[in-house]
Every structure is written in C-alpha cells, then in structure tokens.
Length: 202
Image (cartoon, rainbow, N blue to C red; front, top):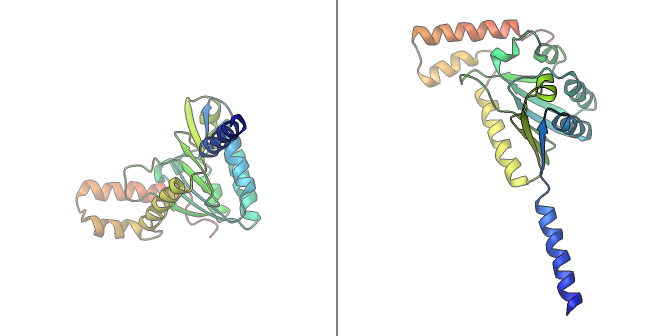
C-alpha cells in the first residue's frame, strides 16, 4: 500500500510539473533575450511576432539566421516606433522580412513571439537593448497550446487588419473617419512609413 501511494504521489507531481512548464523571466537581465534567441534558433517552420519596438541586434541576428534556414517569419510592428533612430525595422525591411505596420490603432503595444506554434514569449519585454539592460520588465515562455492558439488568432486578425500599401484608405473607409484630425494622423503615419524605409529593398 505504501508503494502504491508513493507511486501515486510521484505521478501527481509529474503531472503538476508538466502543467507548470511556463518559465518566468524578469529584467534587467538576459533571461528574456536568451530565450527569444534560443527559440528562434530552434525554430524550423515559422515565427510570428508582434512587437512595439526592436533595437536588439542579437535578437535580429537570430531572426536573420532563422530566415536563412527557410523559416517563414511574419512581423507586425508599431509604425511610429519603427521610424526611431535606433529601430532595426528598416534593416528588416531591407532584408525582405514580411512586415506589416500598425495602421488602425493609436499604437501597436503587443509584445509576443510565437515559435513553430509550440512556444511563445509574451510580456512587457520589448525586443530592445534597454529592456535587457536597464528596464524593469517581464516575460513568460509559454508552451500551453490553448493559450498559444488564442494569440495566433489575434496575430492573424491583426495581420489582416494591417494590410500593406493602401491600407490607410481601407481603414478610413471601414471606420468611416473623415475629420481633419484623422487626415492629419494619416499624413503622420504615411511619413512614418517613409522614415522607416518601407518599400526599400523590395
């Protein structure tokens, strides 16, 4: 009987351990950065990213390496942040990453990456040097497929909303906006597209 209860306890702890796979990281520190790079390096099929800001060259290099291996990478970014001096989005555009820009909301503030549909990194952590070395941030490495699927649905909802090219006009028509203030906002966003280097290199 003692052996039975001991075995039952072992099985229960094993199940609990399997459920509690999510890893929590905090910064300053390299935990988030290291796990993003690791998952990018391990990806074999696809990576889907929604990020507010990216300035971290190490992460970019991991994405470039994955792209060269044939991994399909789709990235959604915030339009105005992409025009910043330190932003790496212009380099990603030149490297022919498949990128779409926020055209419908005040800012695109999501920060998550999905790797092969099996793992996800999500949290306050932007993919920036400051988030690693200076800011108080967090991220969670998730392997719960139910949770990941919900984020994937959100990703492709946004992907569809953020059409390229004439998306600004499409969104204006859909939302029925026609005020001077909204037209000025369109002009600012269009200028941010140009500043970010959209269209350069293909």
